[in-house]
Length: 321
Ligand code: PMV
Image (tube, rainbow, N blue to C red; front, side, top):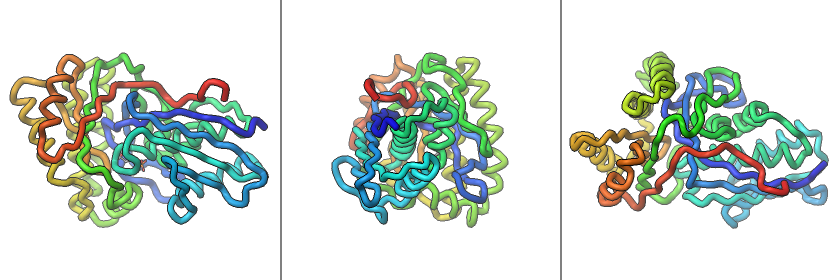
């Protein structure tokens, strides 16, 4: 056994959204999704198997996190231990260079890096699809962060797969941060409440695959406007179904940023909004418009800062791992 490995992964933003799980374990998506893996935001995770450790140890951004603080991470480590027949506990240190658990998809990059480091530290040489299946068990969106560029996670238990390389669509994602703390309702709980209570849940489940197919076709045709329009429609349809169940992730700055995106469009700039399970607005623009759009979004009331990200690489091991 190699014992120790360090992996790096980036978050992704879903252009067509995954929102809703099938019954049972393993985070099996009820709708297909298509994302772009982002550079500019990074999770770095070191995992070491330690036979002398009683329970696993998980340190996130320098702070020790107990089992009750991070049940999903500990459950994932239990599963990793069982799957690899390891008689040791995992000693994990992970660091994000962006706000954790605030809708910036830290669970995607977090579980992608953890899965890859865990597999490698166990001495296994799995292909990316198999690592993605494991990452999905931590968080479905993590399966997509195993790959770079544009990545699809099909409905059901099928593995994530790359759809197009990062260069397929020149794109800048401007992440407008509107809040620096953790979100109120986690995505698993938000999805559960939506499917259980929303009068629009069935409409979302029926509509999402259609939007996904149209977005995929627009991406493969290199049609930026087509991708942007479908991405915005997917985010609005997802949030409409959630809001109807009382699951509201938006704050005042979210609404302000959305009107700024509409203003940009009125002024002739192709800009489109996407929102995940948090209050931040991710604005899709073409590289030529990025600097001007960024300047405008930085001035929106309530927007704390704007992070500029571009399509990037999938999860990888750090040299020497
Ligand atoms: O897989 P999770 O638990 O990180 O949920 C992701 C949910 C959204 O970010 C809102 C949509 C998506 O496809 O990433």
